[in-house]
Length: 489
Ligand code: NAP
Ligand code: MG
Image (cartoon, rainbow, N blue to C red; front, side, top):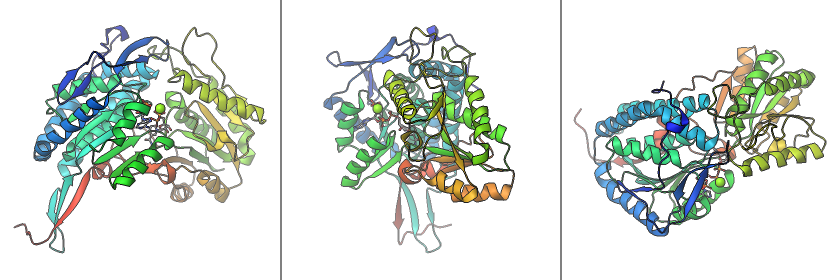
């Protein structure tokens, strides 16, 4: 997997700097935004709150770099991305530790999703780029030319920060686009670390620029700027709608990866024990702060009590603790605000008569935003814990009365990011997969390893566009039809 194991105190936390036009700067008059470790509540670093001048400089650098970068060969860009993938491999352990310190994710998970997976995503995009038909004559004699869209504004969230950055950076760079990246305020340090790797890999000045600061200030200034040709956003539905409106007003492309309230549907012929235990595990990855977490477990009415028993036992087996400790299976939530939001949803549900096992502040911690995993039953289908994305370790159980009812409940959500289906009958499982409106459907727990090329993105309010693989690359490409230019082939 990644390089040598490291103690957290040996990880060098990046300084508060901006990376613009291939240069590092730390203007002394800028406000600093502290970055906390959610397990200790201690400040581990800080980043610069950008001014408009910084943002203008970043877009100007990306614009200036665009022509020369877009004119390089695909093979040249692929070689630079190979070098970046090698650097991710060699420095993956540092990155995983740093990301765990920023987000509170157990290091065992971080190694897989913040280091190994981003590396394989990067390598897979390089493969896709190398096999893409960049220019060809179609059957009508028209020459089809694929060109980079231009300057990309990439705005990423905190929950799988390294993965979410690489999922945008890799296709943008492979196609010849240049990038201005703003990482989430809670987890900006890994982005600065990645910028160091881009620099060391020889990616030319201005091709990747990293600016930092708060979403409401730096983020908003970036979005309102006219410096970009495409915005790729991952985050909440609220901010995504706003960015989509701005992009729509300018008729530029917005790729939006938004939230989810994904169902796991279990039919009566499925192995309930395996289905429930797997759903609990998939729901509680990263303490449930996962956009595609299966947060609604939909089981046959007659099996609700047994499903609850299995789920409660599985939830109780989690070991909460220091994310760096190898025995930890669940870390803290990413921030005090996230913890309070989760507890607020659960308290309100209890007040409406829901049964909640767990879902309280964890005992025995002097610091850290720890919440015990929660299994919720006895709620109506329109209860906010059933309809809203909570983004915490909360699994809601609902009963269904057979296939059609299960499909109805599964699709009764504004979202459509992913789904899981369980049946012993392959034909039924397939039928379920085809009936659910979601961008990804997993049959009977098929999950790992997640293929890095499987397209990822949402139906309905879960977003617009796809990331990863060939579909992800396409988002960064324009298509030109040239008539009258015939290749000799
Ligand atoms: P968020 O508040 O929407 O933030 C996402 C990013 O947007 C952050 O970098 C944020 O900066 C920035 N931002 C906030 N307000 C902005 C504005 N007015 N203009 C420009 N940028 C702005 O979401 P979050 O709370 O970080 O992340 C959790 C949400 O993301 C959940 O709803 C989750 O489902 C969704 N998500 C979706 C996917 C997916 O692939 N579909 C993946 C992960 C997460 P700050 O951090 O500095 O506020
Ligand atoms: Mg936010």
